[in-house]
Length: 130
Image (cartoon, rainbow, N blue to C red; front, side):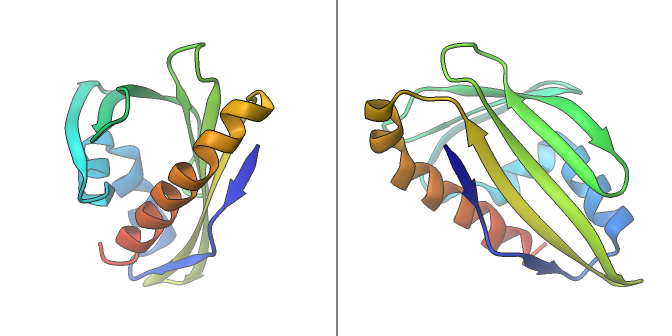
């Protein structure tokens, strides 16, 4: 399953946007209103839970400053990655394209597609406001 958000314009340089996303504690600012739990576990991992959903631990998998940050699920139960591709527009603006990619059976994909799409869109929308 692959989900991609529309590009979001951020009023920060590509370097500043990358640094913001690379500091995992900042993801709390991007989370939806229905966040139930958020905890930074280490420099490379954080845990979050939305109301009515299981806890998910994300960890840094790959980074290419200032253009790309890849986070992945720490659990093998729900294997997926969340990628932020950052492109400079000018020295004070950048664009971020968020994408979600995961291997799920058809039933699971059907169940999680809408919640994941809404979650990704919320991250993208909130990123525009940082």
